[in-house]
Image 1 (tube, each protein chain N blue to C red):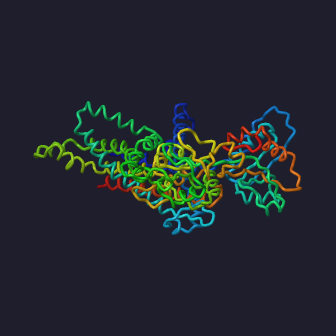
Image 2: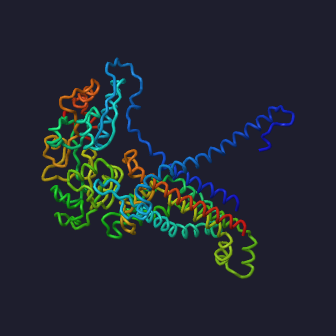
Length: 291
Length: 302
């Protein structure tokens, strides 16, 4: 009896420990990408200094990928990213508290008149995906909004077969979710059947559920699901680039009119806007605007 | 501790010195384990309290709306998570314990030794399967089955999570209760049989009551495992912060932390609230621990 109790006790204690660890280990994702660039390289670097970028959380993966590549080429430069949101990013760029502001929406006229300059680095397209067996091919943005807010609950209302719509989305805080809800105009109003913590989960579940509908970054869509046309336009890199596909938004690097950037910041901006960065941007899940 | 003081002569022989060093080493190892528990407790309390203070304890624990990223009207009520965790664990226990107990009776008493020898490794193997595999199988097999059986839009639900958890806690329930059943003195059973009870009557009326503390320990162990599980149920529960109902998508305490932590900005109220959820979960598990200790102590005295 004593042996069992010892065993059980230590087992439960271990469980407790593990559960505690679960909260702790995930706690400190590095928001400062500088540590990845610290590997010494023999490049004859002429640039040095720090570039502070501040703004959109959706641009995190793109900016971090660009920063990593840039810092590899220029080991003396540190590119910092802080995710505060597009509004704050634009504000700090015009106020001069950061070098480059990041915005995942186009600048408003009043922001431009305040001296903000728009440098579109990339475009982010969000595809709306359904099961390949689903007969619905084409939806309007309004219909999509109605589906996600729970006003339309059956595929038969959209010309498909009778079946309750299963609305799949990403977890709160996800950049894709933020982009989708913002563009479609359903911020914080979505009634999801399920929320998944990765794009792969959304696609997998739409692929296996004939009633499913979900959204995913354009680059993640594969053959197992069908991307519906939005307002008659099929999502593709080309339709995102020419602006006909409507569920998309620009990734903007904001600078201040008239203010001169530091050498390092200017070089980073040039690099982000160059055709060389297209592959890096594509790998981070967006479409380069200058590729 | 006395043994650590060097011998009367003042000088240590190499053998004694080694003995002493090893003792210190073991002492340090012991302290490290305690230090981790203390560290985690202190860390969780320090990082978990600010959000509770900001949201308010009552609003935090009994608020029914969780909308951590809502820009206009954020809410941090974790009652849906707490209830889901309790219902999910209770469901898994209701389903898993009878099954595990009967299996243990079968293995310990009924099954021919050869059959038992074949089944036992299979049960052990079940314990060794990583939880993500349980989740994956649940996602591929269980979810479509639930969706079609109950004609739902999607199979992700509390029911799916309960079934997955029940299967996951089976191995520990089986092995702990089997050990408990085997530990019952043979004389008890012989006496019962001699009085004319059938074998099954003996197992359920004599052996099982005699082993009840061990079986209870198995149940508590199952509770501990079920309430702490995150990965498998993250894949089958649907993860929407609804108030729990059997066929709707739900979010557990563990999955709430797991799914949102990667996006919560450092220092934000959302992240702090996730720590607070961790603290609540930690307290839950502590309570289970204390309950187990009290229970076993009482059993020893009684």
